[in-house]
Amino acid sequence: MRVVRRTTRRRRYRRACACYGPATVMAPGEPRALGKGLWTNRSLALLLVERYGAGRSLNSLVAGLARHGAVLAAPTLVGACAQAGVLLAPLVEAIRQRSQASWHLHADETSWKVFTPNGGGKPQRWWLWVSLGEDTVCFVIDQTRASSVLTGHLGLTEQADGTLTAPGGGERVLSSDFYAVYVSVGRRRAGLVNLYRVAHLRRYFPRARLSNPVQLEYWEKAWLDRFRALYTAHRELATAWARARDTPGPDADTRLAEAYTAWDGAIEAIDTARREQQASPGLQPAAKDALATLEREWDGVVAHRDYPMVDLDNNAAERAPRRPVVTRKNAYGSRTDDAAALAAAVWTVLGTAEKHGLNTLTYLTAYLDACGRAGGKPPQGTDLDRFLPWLASPDDLATWKQPPG
Image (cartoon, rainbow, N blue to C red; front, side, top):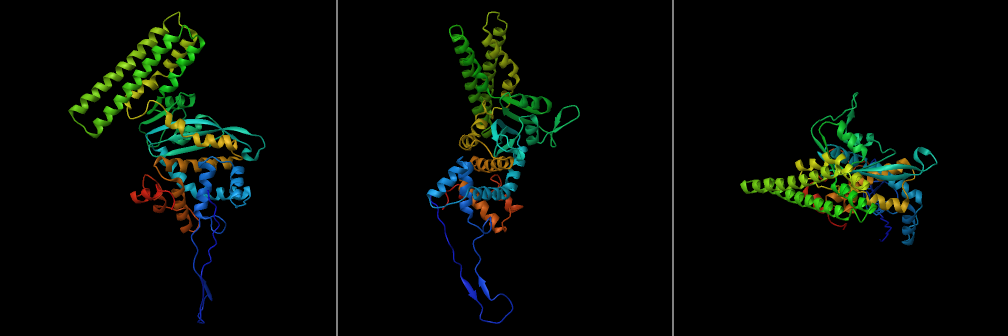
């Protein structure tokens, strides 16, 4: 990183006539998102990318800038990030609305620590939620792990009888693990289909073998072979479905029917084995627990048949929090609840930009340039729509994919 402090001396012009108005006229400076101050739009974008994109702690940033000759106090960086968060708010809200309207979401959550929430003095364990749509990545940091966070993001309203409804209705698909919140929301919201990741179920069988390696060695191997056959059948089904969608015809329909037959065979093999083994009185307790978990989440596995375009696993949602997890290791969390909300907002923007293959530094700089041209305020209307990747022009997307010039 190279820190440069640039001083621009703009030309001044003095009128020779006696007309009414200012005697001295000066050329306007470059439009800055934060107005007067040290931060150009590019340096502010770099600060956000380094702080939240690279997961660096505040002390690390202060020390790193000092090594390059930029001696800045920590409150200066905090204030600049907070002001940038205000400018990013409309962009974040547009991304969240887009995510809320997605027909399919990958969801996951992990712990997050907030040290002085609501002005208090005791660290508390909060939760970082992530939802991935087809073209969005949305983060929320909340103090609870309850279903209210998920229903709020999905735009669901709880009725008097406990059921959940959505304004637009329609079918929604949610890929997740089988944490109780996802299960509960799926049961209470008509039209919400839960898809459980198979890898999470598969891991219970090697764990069961550890309790009795001798007796459960071949039992584990047989189950891993069944899951392997299921993964193979799903890949063939996804390929055949995509081919039937893109190039429809008798040949594609035949291959799709064969792929469905292979999937049904793999599922039937798992279903038959689990039923027979559950009825066996001599099965080890750990193996029975693994089979009980498979039975409890069976509907969320079988439902994958109707959605071959969705992965069997939830790896996308599990990989998405890696950047926040790095920040959690380096900075231990957030100092306040406002700082946590700002982190979630910036991660939402960075994650969505990266999902579209954009260079985050170039993209943020362009957005802050637009804020500067708007007088230090966020762009509105069509000016804001330009920075939504799903509405942006091909020329803008091509420019934002390049490194900053």
